[in-house]
Length: 177
Image 1 (tube, helix red, strand yellow):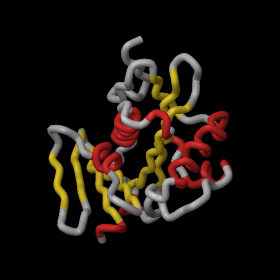
Image 2 (cartoon, one colour):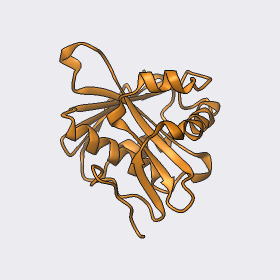
Image 3 (tube, helix red, strand yellow):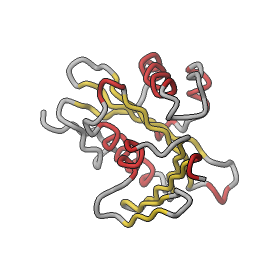
Image 4 (cartoon, rainbow, N blue to C red):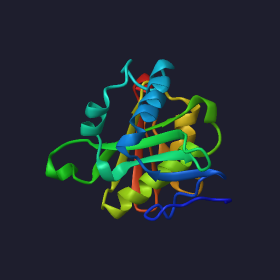
């Protein structure tokens, strides 16, 4: 299988041997382990410990949780999930996302495939802006949210926005602000 796609993830072309699928409660252990590995780098968040699954589950929108798995073994290779930025109706189309890839599987296109799945689910749900933030501007984070051929800008403060499909990606770095 050269490229795996799931229903509802039409734009989520995955690297060979990688399956993009919805996150399930049975994935909790692997998802949280990848999350913790990202937190341990000190570059992903100001958080230092991944939450229990119940807290993780409650904080993220079910329709916007995707993971990349090894098509042969089922091992989780990475995930993305989104949360509402506000409960105010004027922000109904704005979400904030996270994407984490297992340290042993960086630079394979997994993060980009996960973000494509998120963009597809967001577009289907009428989301107009996907925000992200990081404690530092890391090259992988910048590469994943930059889309070739899309309208992209970066301000002097380090804020950036990219338009891909019908969704605007907006990111900022605390270190740059």
